[in-house]
Length: 227
Image 1: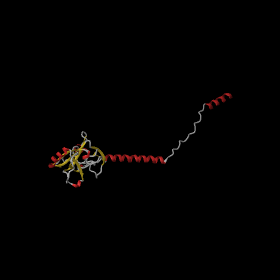
Image 2 (image 1 turned 60 degrees about the horizontal axis):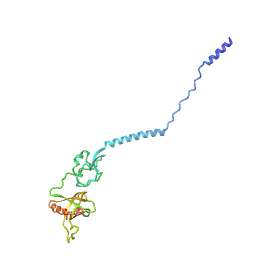
Image 3 (image 1 turned 90 degrees about the vertical axis):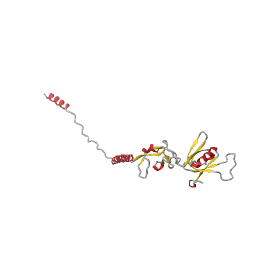
Image 4 (image 1 turned 120 degrees about the vertical axis):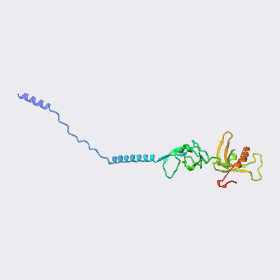
């Protein structure tokens, strides 16, 4: 009887569950003020950028600008202008992009630099030549032209020359005062054709002189007027 009771006690001790492991408290999270401040600053910066982008988009307008330099008096073509978007400025009064088709075919009332905005004062509907005047085209070699490039609106004199084999005139040579309307190169002859505006009564004489090739063009000051 005694040995049986001892075996029962050993069995009872063996079948008991193992003790539970001790509970470990969760790690404490360390607060990092620098990271929190950086996160708040990033959020604020993103909000400011979004506000700036929205303001920039809503305060812009599409207007017309010169793609190339447009000399005064020349006809404005579709290749000369483009649509651009700029910030709205009450001090500026550029032509809206919707005026694109209306501007093409008009003339430049003043010199418009490449990248410049077009305004209502920059274009005109004046048809050339005006009443009482004529336009004469003169083909000139580099030796017959001044070294400075001619611009629309320049005041010039077309002077009669004696030619290569002629003698220099004893007095002042005959000339015709004119205003430059435009220039264009003639690749076939290597000359530059200068279109000039003259009074109707002077057109026939100037055309006859220009046809001989015995002329030279002199650039005068704009304020000098006709001679």
